[in-house]
Image 1 (cartoon, one colour):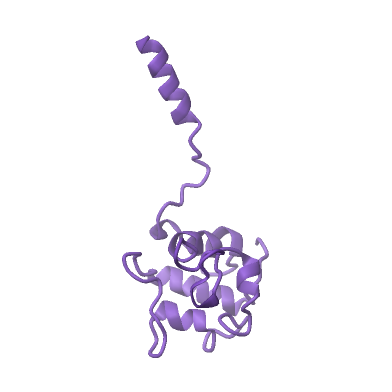
Image 2: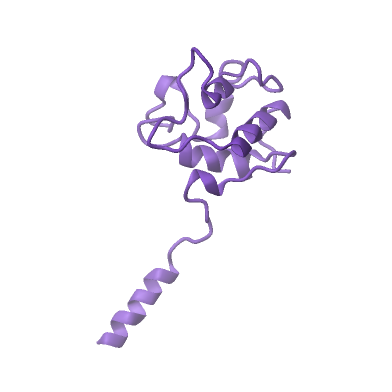
Length: 132
C-alpha cells in the first residue's frame, strides 16, 4: 500500500507543468534589444498585470486588457504608441509619472529597471508581436 501511495505521488508530481519556470515578476529578464512580445512582454504582463481584478480579459481595469497582444493592440495609439515611449501611457504608469496611477499596484512588486527598460525598448522597436 505504501508503495502505491509513493508511486501515485511521484506520478502526480511528474505531471506538474514545469515547462513555464516563470512564477514571479523577477523571473522575467529582458535582453538589451530585439524584445520578443511572446518571450518577454506577455510573460511579465501575465504575472504582474493581466491578473484577476486587474488588467485581465474579464476585469479590464480602466478598460485595459493586457492578457493578450490583441487586447493591447486594441489600445494602440492610446496606452501604447509604437516607437513613442514618451507618450505611451503604459510607460507613464510603470514609471509612476505624475498624473498616472503607478503600476503594478501593491502587493505586486514594482517592475525592476531591466523590465521597465525592456518594455520601453519593445515600444521603441515598434511594439510588434513578432518572435525574434
